[in-house]
Image (cartoon, rainbow, N blue to C red; front, side):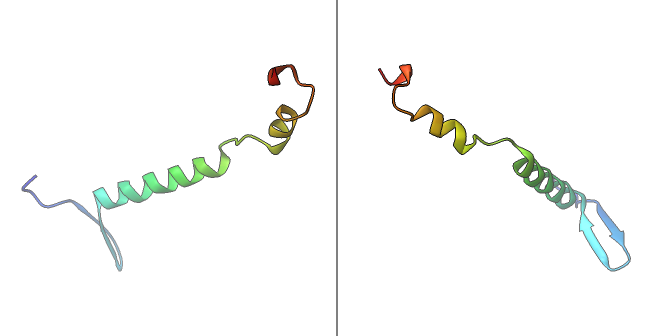
Length: 56
């Protein structure tokens, strides 16, 4: 913990390895949030229809 972080350097960009890993992790979470399936409104509407046996 006392040693300095390792840095990557591309021309004018200088960034530490832990920061690169955090950025990659945030991008992965963002992409997963975009493609993750969410419950559709149709499923909620079907559950709320009258006469459904689940209401009893």
